[in-house]
Image 1: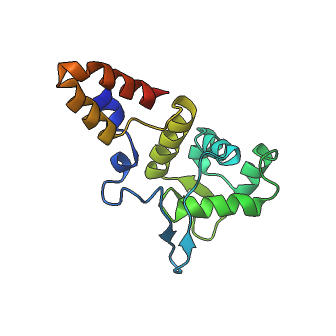
Image 2: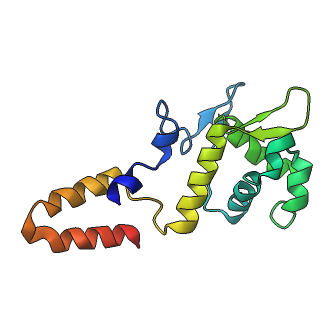
Length: 156
C-alpha cells in the first residue's frame, strides 16, 4: 500500500518540473501566474466540471462553464482567470482564434489527482519521506508500535 500511495503525486505527472502544479510560473508575456488552490470549493467544482466527458468531444467555452457553475462564479472573467492558471502549466489549450478550450492529457491527470487527493484523503497523500521513515522504524522490532502510529497519523 505504501508503495502505491507514495508514487502518486505531482512528480509522477511531470517528471521534468515536479513543482509546476504547486508553485507560481511565468506565462508567455512574463507575468507571474499563481498555482491553483484546490482546497477552495469553487476550484474543486471547476475541476470536476472540466473532467466531464461532454467537453472532450467539442471543447468548451467559458460561457458553458459559467452556466453550469453559476452558483460558484459570478462572471466568465473569474473562470478565465482560473483557466489561465491551467494554461500556463499546459493543463488546457485554447483553439487559435476561437473561444473553445480543451483539457490536455497533463490537465486530465492533474485535475484527477487533485480531486482524489482532496476528496478521498484528509491529508493529501502518503509521502515518500513518510514511507521511508515507517520502513526504517519497522526494521527494528521494538519500534513496530511507533511505525503503526506514524502510518495512522498519515491516514487521518
